[in-house]
Length: 428
Image (tube, rainbow, N blue to C red):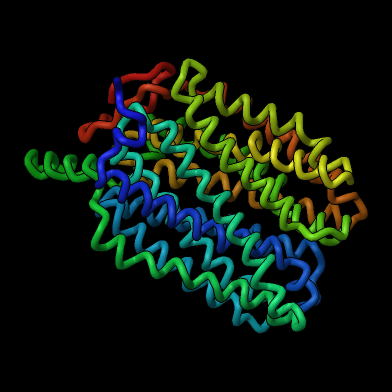
């Protein structure tokens, strides 16, 4: 009898996985806490909804800087160091956000925060997945990406149980939420001592040294003619995914608090529980004959189908159910993304390639909070604006998935060549 999947993973592999997972959980916490306190920030600095949404937009734009920088560093000097620097970076600037004395200052700090947020994903995902057994990469991908939803759950608990302690002074409450963001820095000592560097990256360095060769700067490499198609396609794919996610989640707490006048806690718990379950479901399903593309498609279609239950009813029971089910579909479809992106790029560019694509997509989709906020300022119902954006973005995500190759079955090797992935899986 074969061992259950979690017993097929070695202790060293679990450590790399946990380091990346926890980093992404806390990264998600530090970003999503903003969605709960936008109303307070608007009041403190007297800005409209569009400018408040721009705080999310600028973070997504600067994630590209962090993704490129940390990804390039991860390809040149290893995955582990850039991961640690990124966690320290976003922890410091999350903390400093709470000391902002003006909207302009907060805007600048959130821009800097985005650099660390982008770097954590770019360095962490290849570290975890290059450690992981190839036949279990789908489930690893799903659990890793669900870390962001776990971070959203944590921010929901912080808003529900810590924020009220300071809510008598709204100008203080939102600051405390940001100050909590320093906690991820406590992980660094454990990562430094307990987590091993990627064995795939280390083996490549040994062989390059033996052959007296040196890799080209990976950022330059993914922009050359033979790889630029992969880079552009994956970036556009991620743009559609980002539009979908932030259409679903960014303004949802505000919709609940301001439009429906309800406490958002249980609805956010349902949404992100769905995201966690969905990421694991679609990640696991992507290891079957359905593949990466089929699993993402099923999730996206479920996200579209659940829009009425999510946004067009005021019955609390239906709203909770709608939040759970759209979470399984929309945010949950992200479970295929870490493995899909890392399988599209070979070892020499597996840091910067997925990092660039993921965060170029974030930059493309960064207008989502601003655009939805602008429609709200012009009088459109927040739920109507969100519904349109979710529907269009999910259909676009499906289209981009099916204009790219199926990658299930791709193997990671130290001497990967630099040809883009073929339309069918191949050993690289």
